[in-house]
Length: 467
Image (cartoon, rainbow, N blue to C red; front, side):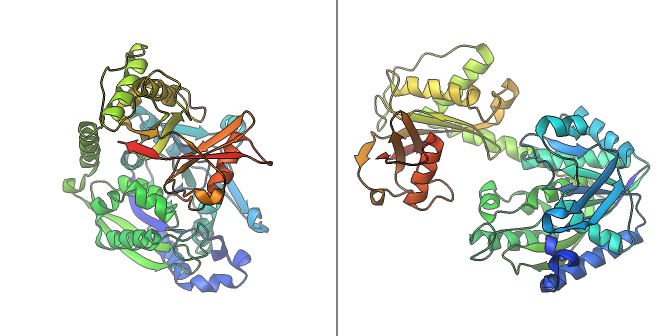
């Protein structure tokens, strides 16, 4: 019977490697000391396998990836030091067990083999999210087989479930296993940070740090998608997968270090399973909370959103286009341009709209665009019937666009913009995350329209958003 002997969250700044840092690594001396202590503690457990969960391998929107190549190798050539390289055996027996367990429980997984690499144009080399922690494992005499897992952009409930199933696969193996979640915290801690500055960055880091220090997994799992987006982090999902792997255990947690000298939060933490405690089985509670939240959302839907949802559900399940309702709602025009947006667990799942009315009524416009958002957005596969209960809708009803003569007449928070040049036109909605300047708003709209140079006409409009 297998055993999970240790869990850890480690950052992955490339400059932590002296050959890359060239002395600058001394700036994060506290982090490096944490690396060494974690490596020593892991070595003392005498594990057979190191399972690494990284955010920087081939990341897919709708699946977790497990590397099935016989040998796992990589180097730091992208950071100018190709001579620092690693080659470790892949513990394929455990990897195959994990794959089998996860798929049997409905978790979408991809096996990264040579065929998948060719199909998606990716390589199977170890990423820096794995290589940086591995460097310190090897420096401290820990050289054991690896299982390499790349997180998916799945909802946290499914990632936590992945971890819970990973636990079962490990316990059904003959191996003593360490699970390492690789990830930095916010990349937006200070002005000049790699992803820009956002005050939510520090708030996120401090919240996560406190949650880990106190072992408050429930609060950590309740961190909102909005905060994650504003923080610009890469460690939350690997950490959720690790915590799922320890579901049902008492946890001994310790934050060994935290610092952010380059505007990026680096945290070193140990999360060690103790005795089994059924009161700490959180997966069912997590799923129940998600279901309750969705039921509340459905009850609070506005008339436009209810119509959009019903239209797509009717089309997907019965192949029929529903008839528009013969109603009037105060504040909603008889005819209007409409955008319908679909989100699935905080991630965009489809968005289609019109820049001017194309149907006899606003209700017909909503029905048509809801169906198109679910089936014709070229960025996504068509919505499947089993996804319908997981979708959250919003409907934007646009005002009549008005011609303007100068960019100064725009306000990205208040107005959307339509740019036009000949037959080409591009639209950008207002109040989009990260778009604060009118010039940037116009530039993005022009890019969407395929307009690279020359004069354009500008129209602005307002939006009423319904949830």
